[in-house]
Length: 188
Image (tube, rainbow, N blue to C red):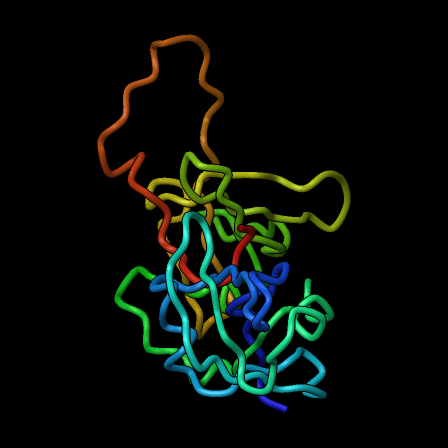
């Protein structure tokens, strides 16, 4: 089975006609309708989004074959996946989280640091999480200054470990603090 990418999660039922709340993890939330059938991670079930509309912080979706509130309630929490090769190509300096997770992390001197285990965004930009062979994971800003090289073909990211900053003496360029680069699946 080709690598699967989580693109959405079904939430609670919405109304009495089988609609569901849908949280998407795509750059364009409405793209979930364009991917065709979406499946569960194990491939046991497939769902086709027949209608979707935006609502506050989620979508409201109609799924083919789901016509009652009871049917919709049973789907709450199901994550929906597509094959990695169905996703559009990324622009330069843009990556899918799934492509980054598992890459080796090395310093600019080529010393091993560990592996990329996650990409987070808590509201202030993307954070890359690196797990060393032993000890606590490192959370670093996913910026061009800290991650100057992403080598997907070589299976690694190069990390420029930041110096500790004390007080307000830190000065950086706009590029140092530019928004992170990954897109796709993430926490709602």
